[in-house]
Image (cartoon, rainbow, N blue to C red; front, side, top):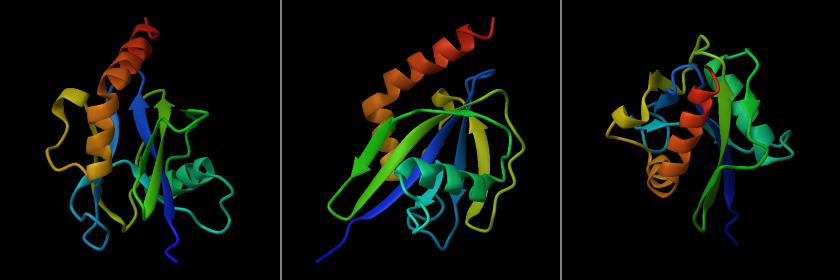
Length: 145
């Protein structure tokens, strides 16, 4: 019997600029050299996918500044072998990022200027929920005035 792997990550949004944070995946990861959210796989100490998302985000970015995270997953990318839960994280600015060895780099980018080589799950999320993300970003930007 094949057990399904579970992973989770955070789609980070800067509420001051509307930019989103992406990680450039390392060469030793699945889908190397593609852009994705910061996240990873479920570990024994994790009780929920949300805990996985928060732990992996911290491990991969070093971000310690407080942020708001969605209560429920914003998007679930699922196939017979893997489920990836994406949560929305809202930041008050762009905190300093200190990537670990799993990533080649990172970028804060506007939705209109996303890199072309996105990991398939992120690409699917943007296709399916792009309008919802744009509306959320517009709402966050409006609340700053």
